[in-house]
Image 1 (tube, helix red, strand yellow):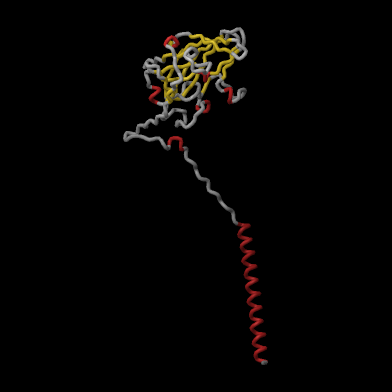
Image 2 (cartoon, rainbow, N blue to C red; image 1 turned 90 degrees about the vertical axis):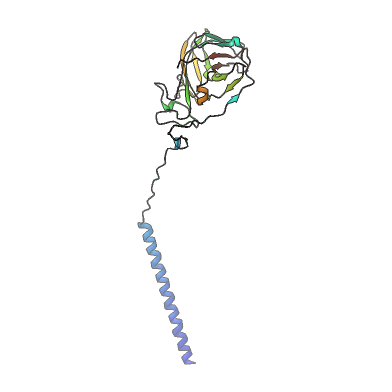
Amino acid sequence: MKYCKIKTIIVFSTVLILLSSCSNKSETESKENESKSENTSYVFESVDTEDTSTEEISTDEAGNIIQEEESKFPRPDVKIKKSNIYKMNDVVEINDEQFDDSINRLKFKINNVTISSELPDGVSKNQVDYFQEKTDETGKLLNKKYIIIDLLIKNECDKKIFYYVNCGNFIEMYPDGKVIDSCSEVRYQNYYDPTTQGIKDGCKVDFEPNEEKLVKIIYISNISMSESKNLYYMIDIVGSTSSTDIKAFKIDIQK
């Protein structure tokens, strides 16, 4: 019995010593880990992001860009009378009836139309609104074309008025009267000042009484439309798609 008691005491003491040793070891490891944590500096490597604006452009074996055509939208609601079709250098007067029954009279004349993949002089890439079009760093379009119109507009009224240039748009019109709209909306106009005008006024041009302005407007179109022989510039101030109100200029560009 005495031997058993002694054995029990020895075993119990041994267990206490082992437990004490484990506790000290755990404490030491914990302190070491804390010390490591305090002294460790984590380096986050920056990952360069590539400009993927041209990444999805397809090319043929010779390296030429394969053009991606956007959808064309037939406009069966638009009917333009032959008497409302003009040449580029014709001066056309359009009356815009207001809500107060007054009439705003404006005259329009197309001075020039240019079709190009490059922006005109004086216009930078950051001034143009792009959607998903692909360009290089200078703004050169890689799979579409700019259609640039210099439109002379005169206020024929003795009062201040304004005109929204998105009342005009490029269309394709065929001899049977069929109208195709495949040109994107206005992307730039030279009288827009973002420091004084909000986005909603991006197409607005103000006129003093009897004032005349040369407005440069830029659109973006697909390739087939830019090469079409049936290209017209349509002005529809009322927005009623009525043949009485809509005027159209036949675009004739010497190439």
